[in-house]
Amino acid sequence: MIVRVKRFDPAADRRPRWQSYAVEPRPMMSVLDVLFWILESLDPTLAFRFSCRAGMCGSCAMVINDREGLACGQRLARLRSPVSVEPLRSLPVIKDLLVDLRPFFDKYRTVNPFYVGETAALLGPAPEPAVVPPGDPTRVVVNQQIDCISCGACYSACPVVGIVPEFLGPAALNRAYAVSADARDTAGSERLRRISSDGGAYACHSVGNCVTVCPVGVNPLLSIQLLRKGAVHR
Amino acid sequence: MVALVLIHLFVMHYASVPSATTSAFVGTRWTPAARGVAGWRVFDGMLLLLALTHGIVGVHGILREVVRRRGVRAALDTAAGATAVGFLALGAAAVLAGSPLHHDAGPLSQYAWIPGVLIGGLAAVATATYAGVAAAAAALAWRFVRREPIGRWSHPGQWAFAFNRTAGAGILAFLLLHVLDVALVPFAPNLYDRTVAAYAMPYLLPMEAGLVAAVVYHALDGLRLITLEALDRRAAAAGAPSLVALVALTVSLSLPAVAVLLGWRP
View 1: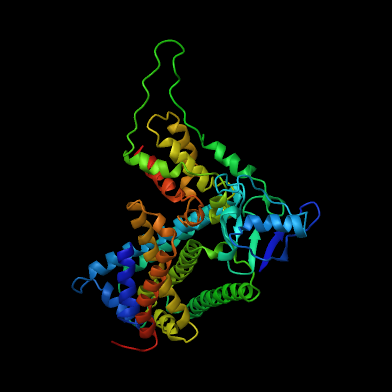
View 2: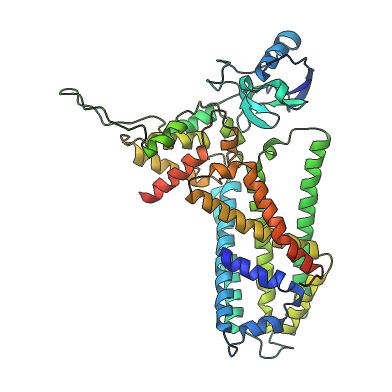
């Protein structure tokens, strides 16, 4: 099987180039396994990111045969040959398959991607913990949306991110919804201002690539829609 | 608006052909004395207003995305808005003026160059359409032959988005030309007749077929997104079945209009 990897070293290359490697597929071999095999057997200069190897951390997200996904979760035998492997799109390439995720997380940070509660009194009895029933309709959606592992696959697949540099992207907007939907959250107004401004939820064109590529089944498009509805209701 | 557009499309492309919609045809609809015709004038006026508004909102959205410099964007936005207002005024004047007093001449009938300019505009839109389709097909074929990655085009949603935007741009270009030619009905009916006769030119027929498909697709895609949004089920919009159904519906609804264009009569 032929595996083609998009190689690029900004310090040495003027433009990216494709490099082909002949690989003998083994049973259960993942794309990440292939990259390790190439690194150890053929080309020690190949750069890529990984961590858990179990589809949980999102570090090895890349574009495999035109689709964003986790290299550790894609079995080589199931891919058509030649297999093409590219870095995530819309992010600066550090080297080969390794991208700089700063633009992704810079935008993520702007939506206050954390729960903001009431400031607890230093003295006096602790407040009763909030009770959110498992069957609560909002909770059902949030349960799905908080599974995001921030791999950047949706950001790469989104054409609006490619066109509009200030667009926050599916992951940040999904996170904005997930924390805003928490009834106890107190930063909703500020978050709403951000998602209603240029590059916010209204810049989305409902293309849906983010839903297609998410490796953990999150539906950022639904979050974006619910953010818009929420903004209208307010 | 979708209902108005589809009714207009049915009248002009299924029940008739554009080259047969002469000044007599339009004049009959707009004659004040005829029974029920006030409805057609209201219909055409509403369609003009809604279609131009929708088009200019689309242009505004595209400018926000592709023009990075705020000053340039503001200037282009203003120019687009002024153009829309101008075309709206022209179209409204034609609708309000109604049918021509004489079917062979009007106050602008002496300007014999007008049909040439309008037909040239139609030919330019057609050429741009053919060149765009050929270039896109060639670029994709080149990648397929060389087995190169096709990028985001592997996603069905990408095609739905691209078709929607391309269809919208094409419809707006045609709409502006269409406002210009329809404005001739009350003021130069003979020149209008010469202009619409050009719609029978073989060179323009593929564009007309593409225009029908573009209008049907654009309307159905809009309905699809509105429906999915209302149902909180936008995930379905991302899947290939949604695009395949949309394209299949567009093709099957457009085929009768193509047959009518080619001379078939039910």
